[in-house]
Length: 287
Ligand code: ZN
Image (tube, rainbow, N blue to C red; front, side, top):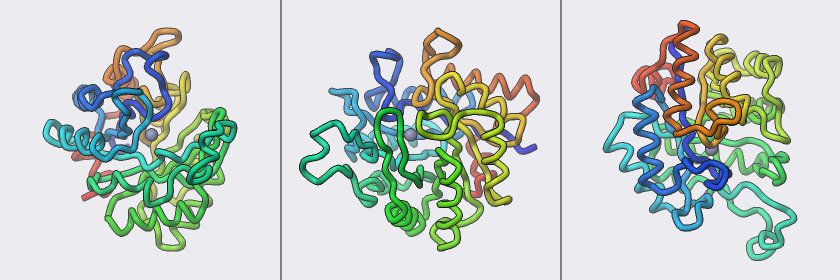
């Protein structure tokens, strides 16, 4: 079996400092979290940035630039930038119904961080309930974003929150907007998406094109069970405070690196080796 690629998702856009005091917010904190996670075995860093004053999700290009440049100076980790910022809508929040309308960002605006030329970026495909909000990516928006990634030569990590998203991915592959081999991230356990069960994971893994690679993330208590299944099934795993704030039941994680270390330990116990960033580039055909 090929080596396990561990992705760390250090902060995301939704977790709050009130719930998890160790959540990285400032560029300093995010860079430190990525470096520590790299040393525990993470080969990919999935990056969001936060407004240091409010702690809220941000699309500020200067924050992205600072985080990406400083990580590149320090470690050889694969950088995977989010393109989901601004895609979540709360229909009951009147502020979003004014101004530009209720879709908060366009495909082009969502892809703005790609000017930093990361090796990978997320590509969302569907519109769905996402907790109490609505996550929006219409098919024309997904097509436009995939087209931008194709033009700029950045490999998309195709996010699958529900089984039907695989059909949208196949539609984009058929249109030549996503190149094979495709890398999928199964995002399981979001309220409104597919739940994190072995049966669901198996169904997804068997539904993607056969030459694809896949990784899985489980939300909250599903983080390590899903990582364990990925280890056994030959997939790859994502952990981090974006998805889960606990190291074990009722115990807050001290850091992202602690979560990566636990995923690496699960792999070790089950006899699967961890991929370095260089090995991950070969597995994902990034070279
Ligand atoms: Zn993310």
